Length: 87
Image 1 (cartoon, rainbow, N blue to C red):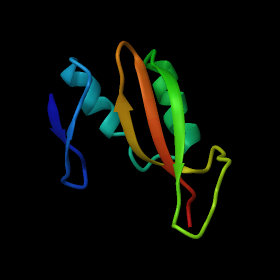
Image 2: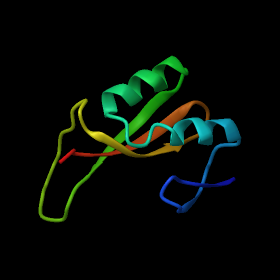
Image 3: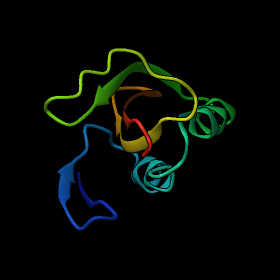
């Protein structure tokens, strides 16, 4: 299934549930802490949280204030989340 993100890019979803893609795109821009609360309430599990940062800034740990950039559905009710440090 293909869907368009808020920034206009088209992504392939590995999930068969169209409602999942709509629900998770609404969490882009949330703080990680708030997004995790919503994900947990909806019954999803997070398999992996990845951090992205500018090339010369090395960040290896995240906290609840980091912002969600992308959430990708996996098989079942699993998700991976990409976050960045807020300015």
